Each structure stands twice: as C-alpha cells, then as structure tokens.
Length: 513
Image 1 (cartoon, one colour):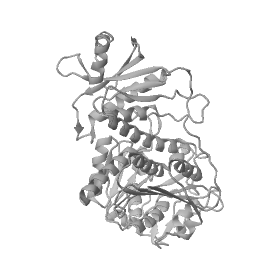
Image 2 (cartoon, one colour):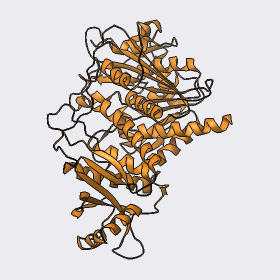
Image 3 (spheres, one colour):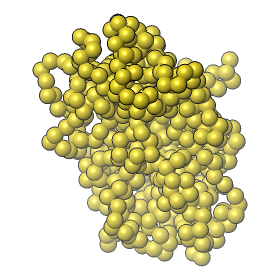
C-alpha cells in the first residue's frame, strides 16, 4: 500500500512536468542486437562467446566468429564492433568486449568487476545502435540478465525533453536468456535511477518544489494539507524557504509492503533544495546552474521508494523530502540570524549556503516519530565531500556498524560504491561552540573538515541507534567516470539504496521467522 502526503504553505498547484518522449523516425520497426564476448585466457587472440552469442553464431553458420577474427585485433573490454546484414532479423549487430568471464568481486575496487563489465558493455552497444536510429534492441543477458538490463537502460537515458530534436526512443528486449525475472528486476532498478536523473537534470524553473511533488504524485497516490509545516514548528526548514517566491513542500511517502503491519519502517530522508543560489551568502556564478540538482537526495530517495514499490518488496518504508528553493531576497534569512528547529534547539546561521543541514534537521526530528528500524538520509550536502572522495564513492557517516555493513554490501553488488567517513566528537565540538545559539550551522573552523562538521551537525538531531548520513555531493553528476552513464546528472546512489532495501527486507524476514 502506498500513501503520499504533501504539505504546502499555499494552495497553489500547477503541473510543470512533461513525460518522456522521443522522435519516431520510421513507420516500421528496425531491430538491432547487442551481444557480448569474453576474453579467452587459454589462447592468445581468441574470444569466448556468451551463450546467446554462441547460439547466434550457430544460426549464421559461424559467420559472427569469422567476422570477429578478420575485422581487427581482439575485442578488449569496453570496445565494440558493429556488423551489418549477417542476419535477416537483425540488420545491425553490435558485439562488445566484456573482459574476463570470472572476474568476480574485487576487494581493492569494492565492486563486482564482472557485473560492472556487463553494465558497461551493454550500455555501449545500445548507445551505438540508438545512434543508428533503431527502434528495438535485443540485449544479450551475458549470464547476468539484471546487470545487462541495468547497463542497457542506464546507457540509453538522455535528457532531451526541452529539445526539438530528440534521440530515438529504443525499446529493449532480452535476447537468448531464460532469466526474465532478473531482466525485469534490472529494468526496474535502472528506471528508478533514471527517474532520479530526470528530477536532477531538469532546469530549476521547471523543477520547482511543486513540480517535483507533481512528478512523484504521478507515480504514487496523493493527498494535500495546508500550513502543516508551520504547525510542526519546522523553523529551520522554513528559514531556508523564506527568500523564494515558490512555496515550500514537505513530501511524505509511505510504502507498506510488509504483511506485518507492525513492522518498524525504514526511514529515508532526502534533501530537496530544487535550486540553491546560496541565499544571501551567494554562490559564485560559474557552474551555479548545476545547483538545479541540489535536490539529488530527495530525487534518489523518492526514486528508490518508487522502485521498491514496483518490485513489491515486503518491507515498510517512509520517505521524507523537504522541498524548497534557497534564494536571496529582502525576506531571506541573513547571516547571523538564529532559528529554532523542531526539537527546540536554536541554530546560529552564519552561512546561508549551508542550508541543506537546516531542512534535514527538521525532517530528521519529525521522522523519529515513526519509531523507525533505521534512518538513512541522503543529501548533496558539502563541496568538501567532492574534494575528499570525488566521484568515486558516496561518503557515509553513521553511528551503526550494522547499517554500514548493509550499505557497503549493497554497493559492492551495484558497483555504485560507498566509503565510510569519521563521525568523531572532535567535529561535534566545532558545531556546538556557538556564540548566540545551541548550534552553529558551519562550525568553529568553517571550511576545515566541512563534510565531517556537517555530519556532526545532523547528528545533533538524531537519537536513533541506526542512522546513516550519505553525502552525495561528489557523485551528483557524471562527466565520463561511469561509462554506462551519459554526461549529466547521475541519479546515484539510487540502485545502491534499492539493493540495501532488498537486503533489509531479507533480514527482517529472517528475524521475524
């Protein structure tokens, strides 16, 4: 069962969103095929065809393997070739290199190399065939249909909703594998991440707090209430929204998938700043446009809950997303102002560009009222995290070894990695030493250890024994680091969150049985 609560400060509603669309260049269907080949360690220069590729090769009387031998050097991992006219049903066949067949989990890289290679290969092949304007592409399951589906679906995503000329819309189908269940699961995982990418990539004037909520409403069931944020005494959240003409929205999602209605929920909280100018502490203008994605935490949280619902996972989840803009105006919060959070703690706001922790503080306080099994908040919180880890991994701050182990285990499977960061009292002392209030929103030494002091600030609003803060600032966008994601907003770590929920579902089932 799904329940969606929206709380807004006004009754204004308007739908500013458009569904996915793509150009239709042909009246008839044109079909392509993506096949994989592994490196054969036995003989130099030989390739080992996947099961599907071997069957295809047999159907064309060995022509595929012959062409692979004469068309150039051995097909290495991530490289591809296209062959035309070798099968009547597939005018174009893309063959991609998958590396070693039994690579498995790499401890140094903290991911499953085989899964990552399949994701990269299928994405590359599908992108090549999309450029040829093929409407339908069948994809080799490569012995791991879920990873193949993830790579193909993630690789085809392209934000062109606002362009006149659009990329060809490609319908994906599984080829030569009986693992239809794994394929469908992979499609669902990837579509969840693509939803987050859509939310993050859209321009801020299109993806306002109201528009964000409208998109989630299209996925789930809505109901609205007025003036609730003020009634809940969420002074920190409201202080951030004061400078904008757009009304703040507090989005609350309930997914009740467990047959046990008394099962404590998993609480997911996402930062939802739909545009961050920095407020009175104005950001530099270069790259400020990227701050349309400062609601990446809310996007990934909402997308993961939508995905969990699509997968019908037997677990109860509550999602909270405080949504607003951070803008400068005569009504905006000023540096040095003191605001009061929901739990009664006062906060000296010395930097209005450290606003994410303020809206999360009130959401975390409210979330405790549900007595959750565990709390995970996700936020593009600090530039310091980007400096620390770059785009290699999401930084995780947690008070729970159990929760860390579950998040890390999930990230190894998805290839969307996490890395544990320190949550020392050393940092707590820096945010509790405030001249005018209980807390300071930037800490005593300002820039030093910025990601850590931000986490320490959030900890002041957490009493639950299992809490994790995921700082996703470094993984917000993709340039060329992840081969199966095009340039743009990444939607990370949506699949890791879904895999984590899947694992928690199993643990809950075992503990209750």
